Image (cartoon, rainbow, N blue to C red; front, side, top):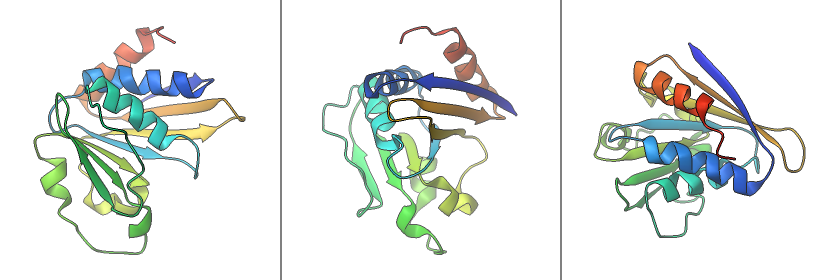
Length: 155
């Protein structure tokens, strides 16, 4: 398992980190985001969306479960929080193996439905402004992305 940690010290840096990742994503990529309420999962997703040239405002899909956005690739933004203790499959495979990018907040609640090939990101609050991002993967595709992140000094 490849693991990489990176700190951001502002909302702008969190979005920039997401943007950097978004520019490197490919059809069928699955990104999982986990962390406490208010830690910055949707803020990070806004950065990913910018990297995919999505112009619409990105909002949390908490009450709709999935929001779809058009960009250089479609973005499927999911929030699995309301699916805790549910065995309901809302057609995840159509998203995970579809034409776009899947970003799943609260992914631990749908662990059984997630593909093995994914980039896991855990976000932790260090203080009011600072966040620690832990990137984890065991797939060649995302190990390459992590290697690019390690070299990036764009913040």
